[in-house]
Image (cartoon, rainbow, N blue to C red; front, side, top):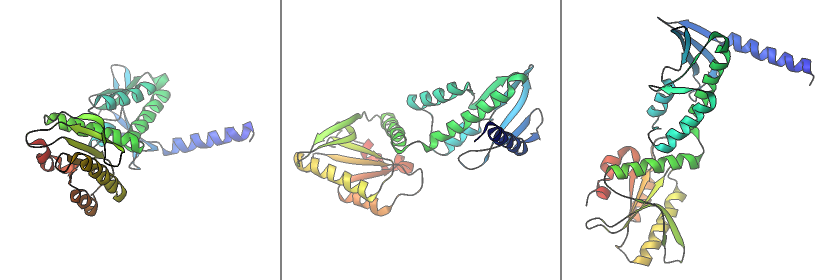
Length: 257
């Protein structure tokens, strides 16, 4: 690949970019539709207006509100810290849920590019790796429990009859007529995941004696429905499954003494 060939490729890219950019007029601003796509395969749009001689670029709050509508709430310290790190890396800030930057005309190209990159990076928070998603779901579960005056201990190991130690996401002390409880946060309930949790609970209960352990599983159903057979499998082993979208009703047995 020669330098001339590389320049030709760059020029072709710039020509494509210019052709794909569209501009629409609004009342006091304009909107730039870009060829870059968000996670819905929709074009990323940037709104541009003048404020006191300064050019203001914003996504009009679309990116963060879209995450919230998709059940990814940015309401914990870890999530806020992750969001701030992304925005800081691109020199973008968040104001009233808008991702935005201000610039002078000479810096407009770079600042616009930075904002688009920041929007794409924030979009990726929804499709983070499975372990990261699970950690966020665990945060949601813990926050829910504490809001209901249930004080959980995180990452608790309990010994089973088999001699194995089993790690549970949370443990809660005895409450009223309920024995000590264990809680597992499950981001995706599969047959194998249900069987594994059933063994863990059964093994610990066999070591302690029947009736000396209560078990609960919070199931993340933000991506769709949960297999009813998998839920039944948990129930058969004395594990109360709590589907996240129905948590207020289904968690009443756990919360009430």
